[in-house]
Length: 431
Image (cartoon, rainbow, N blue to C red; front, side, top):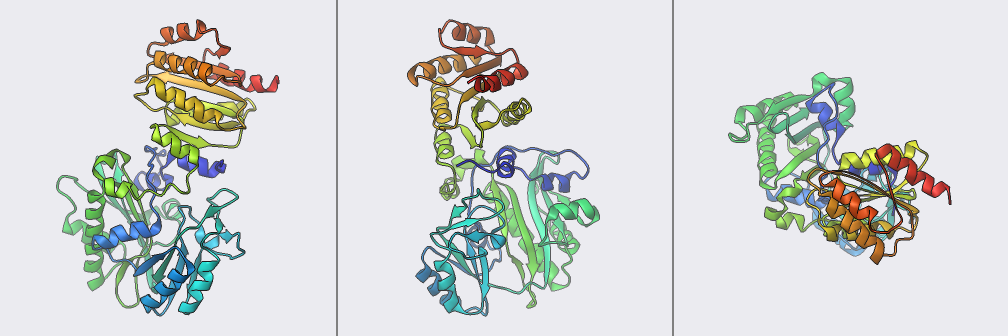
C-alpha cells in the first residue's frame, strides 16, 4: 500500500519540525534518525499510569460487547470512546461503516456499544492515512474529564543541548507549531543536566511558566518529574503531552501523549518493543525490517535503492525533476551484507508497478564491491526483467565497477546522480 506524499515525508524524516522550531527558533530543521517503534495511545497511557503519571481511567476493548461492559465499569459521568490507530486526525475521520469521527463523547454507557460496533472491524480514514483508511481493531473506553485549562509540555532529547530539554507553553491543546511561530515568547525551555537529573526548582519553574498556581503548581511539578523519570526509564527521545491540563476539581492530568523511543535501546527495552504495533504497516516494510532494511512505498514506477535517508530524499527529488516518479525507496544503512542486497532486490521488485530500478550508493561505511556482488547475484537469480541503472561512489568503487562491467549483465552505469536519474527515467519512456 503506497503512502500519501505527506505521510511519506513524515515517515522519512520521522522528526517534528515543530520541536526543532521550539528548541531553535529561526534556525533550520534538525533531522533526527527514524524511530521505528509505534505505540497506540492506550499503550502510552498505560506506560504513564504504571509510572505514577496521572491519566484518565480507561479500558481497552476489541469487541462492541467488551466496550459496552467497560463503559459500565467506569461509572463515569461522561465517557469518551476513541478508535485506536496510529494516525492523527481521528476526531475528524470517517469510517467506511458510515460513522463520522473516530472520537465520540457520550453520557449514556449503553450508546458505547452501538458506537463501537460501527468502529471495530471498519476502516477509519483521516488526513494522515492512505485513502482506503486503516482498519480499527481496538477502541479505548475512557473517563471523560472536563478541562478548565490546557497547556503543552514535552521532554525532548536535543543534541545541541547534549541532553534532555523540557519544553512547555501555557497555550496547549492546539498546534504547538503555530504557537512557536506566532508567539515564541510563550515557549519556555529548561535544559537538564542528564548526569544531575531534573531539579525541583526546574520542575516548579516550568509549572509556573505553564500557568499552574497555588497547590496546582506543586502537583504539576510532581507530574513533570514523573514524566522525566519515565523518559529516562524507557529510553525515550520524546515524551509529548498535549494537553497537559487541569480539571475544575483541581487535578493535573496528562490527557493525551506521544512517546518516541530510541531504537538503539531495543536490546534493553525488550518488553516495550514487544508492544510494537505493525498491523498498520505495509507488509513489505515489515519484511524489510526483518533484514535490517528500511523500505517506504510510494506511487510511481522507479524503485530507488540507496544508503541513507538524505540520499534517498535527494534521489526521489531528482527523479521527479526529470519527469519520473519514485515507486519506493529502500535504505541499506551502514554495515551491509551481500545477502541484504539480494533481499533488497526481492523487495523492490515485489511491487508490480516497478518498471526500472535506480541504485544510488555512496560507499563510506558501505563497501561498494559488496553491493556490486549482491547486485549481480540478484540479477541472475531473480532473472531481473526491468532496466537497472547503477551509480556507485566511494569505498572500493573501482573493484565494484569491474565486477559490474565483467558480469555480462544488462546493467547501465551512471557517472553521477544527475546522470543516473536521467537514464532511469529515459529507460521507461523509451518503452
